[in-house]
Image (tube, rainbow, N blue to C red; front, side, top):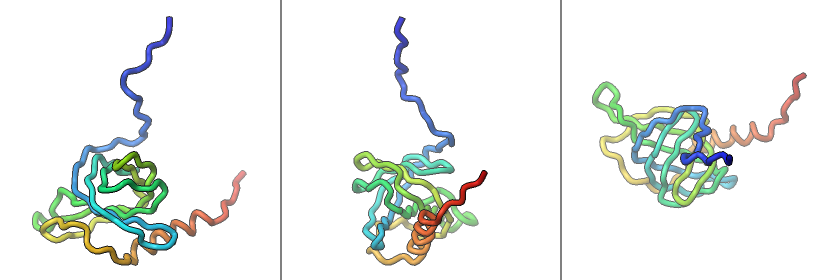
Length: 143
């Protein structure tokens, strides 16, 4: 008797994801520096990554900074945003998944604004430089 295929695709995630739908802005970085950015919306967020939709297709392995409007007020008065530094893991059309390599919370203006004109971001540049240094650092084998 043949084994029937499961109707639902098995979820291989090791970490739970929360369905958080928030507006976001992103910046992309390549070897030459800042290469663009845009807007989108988060689909779900977990401790290891974020799934989101964007206004354009993104290249896998691109370094990315996400700025996500966060649904919590600091001291019940000041809006917050989650800043995530990571790498695009995969992309299908305008839906992408990126890692969370570093994150921080920042305060934001009262209203969420469209992506500002692209500018050099020193923090993103420093983070990308450290990531690149780690990827070329020789690894020591342990016995």
